[in-house]
Length: 400
Image (cartoon, rainbow, N blue to C red):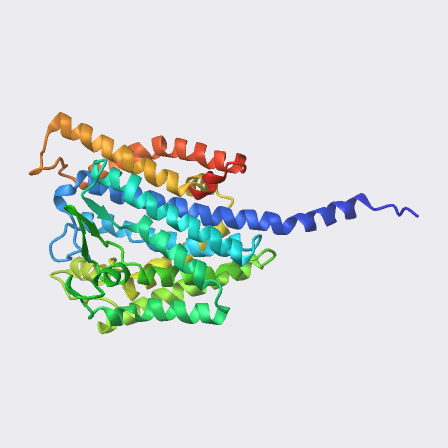
């Protein structure tokens, strides 16, 4: 017997069937949109490094001497690496919703090795301008690669153990700051990779600089993975935003309380010659490796932004940011080479204007260049992101 179905009921059933997939799509838009925003922050910082080579900032930034405009321009970049690493862990969990843990681990290992390869080849060439660099900077791409490989193993831990290990690393790694090894010590090289920013002699006049020691970042990627169930299919969007807001505010409150105590988590702050210098000192945090306070403040803001982006996902800016965040590795390589080419052209035309390098006098020129470059960088990145969506049959595209 054939039962006639009410077309309105069938339409409603169809909506109910489609809801989880649609919800997942919207959540991914908010995640990619947040990536896209911090990629714009990264552009600001790298333009600064291109035109302000003569005014390099220390880590943490010296609040007593640096120009406030340069300080706050630099401050924007602090949100980039923590956001990327935390979202990498979250994305790994989302990938696991349609793949086994073994498949997720395999992908993380292969992707991690690929990123490490890119760091010492194409990324290194872009920074140095040399086909065979004498110095290998083991920076953020290297660190994300290593963290992915670590996550490939750690994701097999029970959930409670993932939380404990992640929190112990993030909250406790500053206890290791007093361990400083020299090249003569037996474990100098692995310790330089893990926690001590240092120089490693490679022989033949080549060196490696461990700009981003990896231990704290492994904690961040693991906690990002742990947060994945907040974004499970069919989960309550309002509850998720509430939890993200609570998490972000809790981290920022924790940052303020611990920072005010001046006893742990970073180098002490001080009262400056005026209120602005005092604020700058309070916000001047250690990134290499990232201190507890650095991570509390930056990941806390990231959680708040993620909640905000999902709430306002219908805003016309969200799809544009999401497309930018949909091809982060392509954008990263593209903008490095564009900036290097622009710098070499300026150096050829004007010569070294600041000692041995070309530089500009005013920070507003940096922001002007950012405004000029956004569209030329966005258009090819959008093309590549759309190509990734269309050509699922091209395997290597997903590694970009």
